[in-house]
Image (cartoon, rainbow, N blue to C red):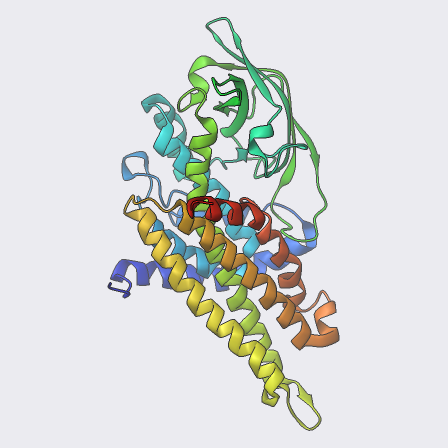
Length: 382
């Protein structure tokens, strides 16, 4: 196997790293203070072509492959997990349009997603249905032959309540299957659709600047041609899209480990205890060595899985593995970084405090790690 990045990948990596350090880092500090969506930063990011990074070129996107996207994601997420996740959700939904949309749906939505004029959102989680996606209660019923009427609630939905949020993909039940399970379908719901309203937003321990909120559908009417993909295959379609999301969460874990290592190494070299640098103590060195090893190992595996995805090869099990190991080890890295910083880690002024607050949610988002273990076991024939 050739492990060298292409010239284009190296150039994108350098560009994203430079942009993240110059633009995203100060914006992250601002997001932590005001908890507002960074509209100006998103515009600059979109102007670089990054909002449409995986959208086909015929719709105004860059048409870049999964591996190059993951390489860029690591550079961005090392500086700001929040902004990286805003981008990740947008890319995931745009990919659903590209893979499942009709020509008319693609023509309408993909160019504005590629330009970053609209921000995409994926609406799956409900108050009583998180890991159990088959337990959805949001229901869509036919309105004659003209369309569908949606009723229900969604919760913790990312990107849905910003001034530019639009074209969200909503999962709803549309009947029962022959085996007795619910048939689930995907619907495109524009922001101005009658019967759709934004519910409460949430005060979070991290990811400030990313909009997460409840959505309410009360006799929300959408035309028949707003169904995305095939009727009754929405869950399978969504899980296919989540493969890429899980690969990305693996690289978010790598970025978290890398950020923890950078902060901890700098602090340990500059902090003296008992007349010598903290970095000279073997217990500290062991934590730093683990972070460095885990970052390298997980990065290599995630890149392999992203390559499989880019080649169109099956990678359901491997995507779950990437998410599981990347996020699990990033949580450990954040705990170790906090321990190295001691009391200073408890203070908001230190970046490691934010990294600690951000780390645990990576084990929950995009399917909990327990769900990943079940998926892997199922693939093993259990």
